[in-house]
Length: 329
Ligand code: CP
Image: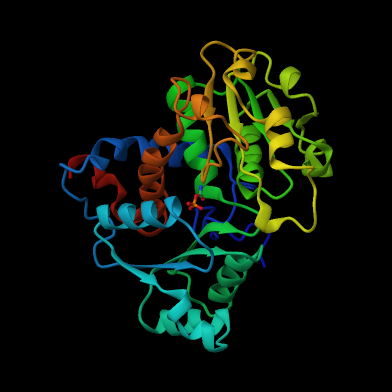
């Protein structure tokens, strides 16, 4: 594998695998391109032809509501042909390997694979396979791999923060909960650092915070009240029970009492703080309904911005030669 498998020999983005290793320039370009698409995510506006004639294959080996659907909407708004492989009915259920499945879809003239997989590294494996096969015009977008990375979620989170806070350089951002198992937290932390956020706090019980946080320049805090004091942005995370081996917590009720975001705890943050959550949300476990549905929550805005951000990523990867026509369409 090359040093940065996301970039081609000209330093251009050819796959989106992680926010780690993406330059500030590339992230900003994606956010700026997304901004040009926000207007056309209105259903009344016609599609743009940036991916006309291209085939996007959604390969979701793990459940998804938001990511799979918004990738499909985004690809259709770019005029691509979208194919959602039903993994449970595909030949992977008969023992076909992931790379044999990929080879067959390449033979059907796939232009892009959007991949979610429970195994960390699966999208990297596909990207490396395409490189070895000399298939440099086929792109891979990581839609979440194991506990490793979820780069489009990280980018739509950055878009949301920039939308509500305008700049990153003066922000204090708290990420609360199960960071150990969270690919979203890793993607957010790398992007926040690259965009110049001076203070990132990780809040949670010791059992759910990975040791690498200090190395990443993140402040670790086990006290929720102290951790969210004067924060501008609070990112709440779901307890990833499906990725936990054994019991890392006493009970969901005890977790909510200590780390659940209630209106009372939120009052310690800045009055204009925004509350984010990648979804799916567990009300009464990591967040109270009064907060999730309250005026400081931007959780559904994140979902809507996700369409424009995914349009930006796909158009920059596969519609590069036509990007200049976006505004005139
Ligand atoms: N945020 C997120 O990845 O949600 P889904 O699992 O519904 O795609």
